[in-house]
Every structure is written in C-alpha cells, then in structure tokens.
Length: 166
Image (cartoon, rainbow, N blue to C red; front, side, top):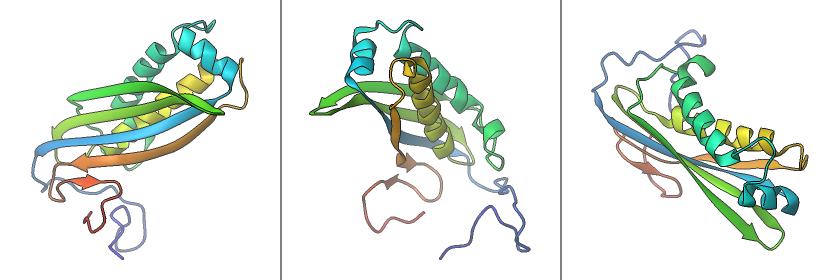
C-alpha cells in the first residue's frame, strides 16, 4: 500500500507540499447521475419546472463550486482553473430516467484537478435535486466518480484500465 499523502510522519492531517512539483497542463473528467421519476423527468425535459431552467442553473452552480473546491475540501490546494465545463445528457431506460452529468476541469499547475471536476459534478447534481425536489422526493444522486485524469508525473489514468499507477 502506498503512503497516504495527507498524513504526516506522526499521523496528523497535513496539506501536501507541491512546491517542488513540475508545472504541467492538468485535466480531469468526472461523472454522476441524477435519477428521478417520470413526472420530474418530464418537467426537466420540457423545461417546465417552476424554479426555472434546471440544467442552466446546475451548470453555473457546478462551475462556481469547482472554483471554490479549495475552500470546501480542507486539504485541497486552491487552484487557478483554466476551464470548467459541464455537459448534461437526459436518459430514459425502462423504469430508470434522469440526467447524466459529465464535468471537466483544466488548469496549468503543480497539482491535479480531480477534486474540482468531482465537486463540479456533485454540486450540479445537488442543484438538479434542489430544483426538482418539490416534484419528486425520491430523486437519487448516483455514480459520482472520476473518469480520467492527465498531467503531472503520474501521466494519464482512465477508469477501468488495469495496471495504471497513481
């Protein structure tokens, strides 16, 4: 097992010192899903939600959250992000329906943007829930995960490819 990077030699929580790391172009992509019932899905798809444009608001919320990740996650470095994007795809399979969210974050720096991509997706999903909860209390947020990352010493990592180093 590799050494935990956020624990010092005495076992105390510690912020990683990235001062000696090389500055490189870094990117991370994350995904998540918001599953809901038919009435909420129809309102989302048809853009008839009383609170307004659900996916438009969720996109802005996710981007704003990514920019504040260093304030939300205690040992996460604050980063100057170069780009954050969120894409939403509605899905409807038998009894399962909802929206899949893909978030991408990029920066040029000494540490990766995985947390920023996952924060963007998480807050976008929470925003979808918030705007639809009056219609459907059974909404579920599922599958929030890192899909891939690149940049830095560890290079490219993609979910599901065995034998990759961290």
